[in-house]
Image (cartoon, rainbow, N blue to C red):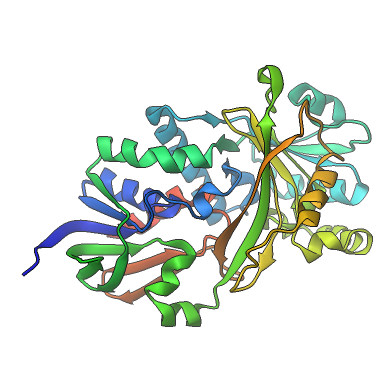
Length: 376
């Protein structure tokens, strides 16, 4: 008879959602085992900007969750000695309808001391990359932090295993769950609590729940440049008017409708491919650029050159860099549930599926994990 292994908390998936839940549980003294089907996590968690982006979340529960996540991120990466840049962000407005949204946004966020509306002169002092010619104004936010997703997802497991009661089982596929049992390849495990944090792959464990959830998948295309010369640094992450149509924090603004209509009329390819353009920088000096959003259960495995060209063309209307030579292109896929910021389900007692953070995993996971683990 094969031996049955036991852990107090079993977590399926070593992406950012799984790592966040592992940390939250281990900090409370639980023995945690994380199972990852690959030799290292290679999904959506490494294929993004690395932006921790509280300003993109609406005031209230989600902004609070994002700010809590930011606190935990800073605590973890400082202890682990990993790259992080808390340089904030600038949203640049060159058209009156964009400025109208920013003015309404700041008015409805009155009293929030982490944001401010800046003029072109003030922007120039914060960023040499921002194009100030024709700039009507910009939203400055001090809360944004950039990490390197490839570095943190690769290196955090070793740090967590060395500092907390967390064990990682890489290259181990969880084939079936029937509480308290997990079948892991040819191994049998039991756990007191089980969290399934395996991204869009959770459909293989719970196909019926997945089918009934109305979750879809989102494919995004991204790029990164070669390292910038002479240790040139971007400073605050930059984005522009298109992004106002993407993040939930701006959705309450009544002035947003006019902006959306103008974009659809002048540049219909942007809403067609879900394009909004942002740029961050990693510790190697490379610029991370993107992105687009294609929705559907079967994402096209092939990338479209025209989408990358749209991103690059728009980028150069609001930002300038010493070197824009592209060294890599790729795409990521994440799970999204329309109208929801996360999908949480309990297929049976003591088993929780945590999924569908809708592209905000880096921003929300640590805070969400604190909430979920506090309920144990």
